[in-house]
Amino acid sequence: MVRSIASRIRAIPPSGIRRLFDLAQGVEGIISLGIGDPVPAFDTPEFIKEAAKKALDAGYSAYSPNLGFLELRELISTKYKQEYGLDYTVDEICVTCGAGEALYLACQALLDPGDEVIIPDPSFLTYPPQVSFAGGVPIPVPVYEENEFAITVEDIQENLTPKTKMIILNFPSNPTGAVMQASDLKGIADLALDHDLFILSDECYEKLVYDDAKNTCMASLGVQDRTIVVNSFSKTFSMTGWRVGYALANKEIINAMMIIHQMNAVAANSAAQMGCIAGMKNEGALEQFLNTMLTEFDSRRKLLVNGLNFIEGIHCLMPKGAFYAFPNIKGTGMTSAEFSEFMITQAKIVMVPGNVFGAHGEGYVRASFVASSEQIKEALERIKACARNIK
Ligand SMILES: Cc1ncc(COP(=O)(O)O)c(C=O)c1O
Image 1 (cartoon, rainbow, N blue to C red):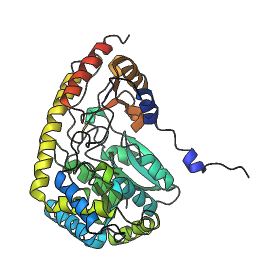
Image 2 (cartoon, helix red, strand yellow; image 1 turned 180 degrees about the vertical axis):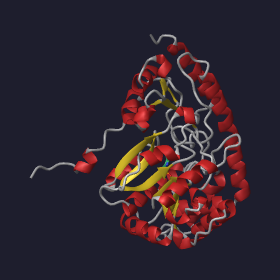
Image 3 (cartoon, rainbow, N blue to C red; image 1 turned 120 degrees about the vertical axis):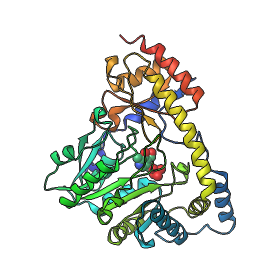
Image 4 (cartoon, rainbow, N blue to C red; image 1 turned 120 degrees about the horizontal axis):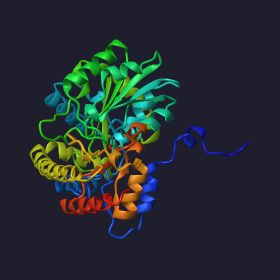
């Protein structure tokens, strides 16, 4: 018998991001536009940290219930009622170790080997492996800059087969910053109804929207019973390292997800959940925190995108959500990987090659605007100077 790592893991290609960060490692004066974490810019609100510390002192060192503390699930249920008019009972909510675990649980709970899953391309890089881990088959469906990176019903339809079981959606999107209109999402909801498909809707950038953009909760479009809504405290509450997210779905799906969850994580971190409870209860303070963060990200977004649009060979749509710009670099004549490597070695600026997020991300890079305005200004100067040297 040959000892080896499981073939399903060996089949996952090495992360393009890791190579990039290896290249950037230890380079003095490097500015990273590569990160997807709000915490360096905005630490978790103090009152949330205090609540978690107090919880530890009060003995919250034990496991929580598998689905998460009841009070937290009650608060989540109220939020969905108030904000989207949706009714979820507390046993239709599972608190998880970040949205990442919720995505994993949903794929494991719903996919049989060979089931096909429609995934926008480009999109968050964990979706295809999550589907593959469950034995499913990722079916990338291109999204186009001309269409502001929205996924269309027609493109989904073209890729449907009798094996299609689920559609993964992520708006506001990582990496494109796209936010889809409710009317367009409604078309996808109707398609899911017609073809008896599940929808896995990752809405973890829900609150990070700009201008007149608005998050639409997929479940509110007449498909609550077939939709798994995934959300997270990571981005909205700036709590990435605390590892708390959640899923909302019908009881049958949540029960299936819970079986896997209790055999693995058991429950999300107890003290961290207590912090989340404090966050959700203190609506006024949270709103203030969010407004400050949003105002700042909005101004960094405009600074970055307007600056990029002045650089030869680059043009960039103004993203409507999340904290990522997705500039088109095709005019430089370089591939995404060549451009990223060139910018790291010549300009000391980290940007993630777009093809890391799917084959149709080729010709783009992801530049995040969680970096400070000063860093963004400096990054733009350096990119501009280097872009001139691209032959
Ligand atoms: C689209 C998307 N979904 C899920 C996650 C994972 O979030 P969490 O920290 O809640 O696991 C991320 C993190 O970057 C993300 O961008």
